[in-house]
Image (cartoon, rainbow, N blue to C red):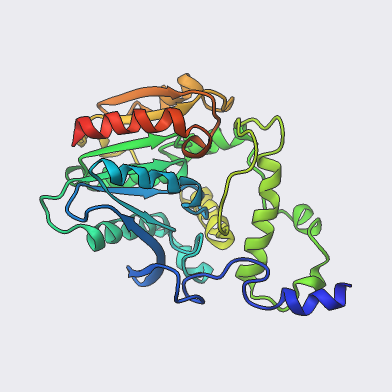
Length: 315
């Protein structure tokens, strides 16, 4: 049986979904030197709302409900980040050095530039988890370019904060030898490119993070396309070596941000939300009821009216 399935498992798309580099039918755009999986919904002349997924190495599938904002006067843009989701895989060397995190901020800047039709078009950011951190990193560099932001449970705005949060949230160390040894017999997926094998393994171990009774409060699994294992591993290692601080210039951003935290994430809560959001001069803290960390998926019914009310106020 293993021999018979081995041939099938080595065919592209059998182990993990194809990326935009392998499937030209997927919507994509060439952004900042790489090809990203990206989509846009609504009137291109409306205020721009860029949706930024978590991870690193996640994708926007669980956030796709945010296309509903396009029916309320926003031009909604989604993209899978560099080396993540269905975007093109890049070598690990791209994520080396002190500027690795800055590369992801530059990608966001290029996404905005790609879809923005004029300098008068307002730009809003909607980020979840790592995506909310990345949005803050962008605001820290370009405070005058952003009209408002919805930030859902960023782990921290510095590496020290993020490391503390990760220690409480029981994030799985996907790439320890013990966990790698637990995966299917290696011969089944032998011969596949490294990215495909590691992406498969990373998806397999998210089972632990969302198991019953998990600390971050998710009631089960949420939809995703494909993990970006190399991007995740490299950025975590990079942060451990170089750190980051997205708060150095936040005082220059005087507009209010909507800072959301979930009711059921025991590693977060109101006190951590207050700590993380403190560098923003104006942060409106609100709790999203009935969900854990995956606020936009499991908590959509409470999240959407809160976010829409804020965005309409800032528009």
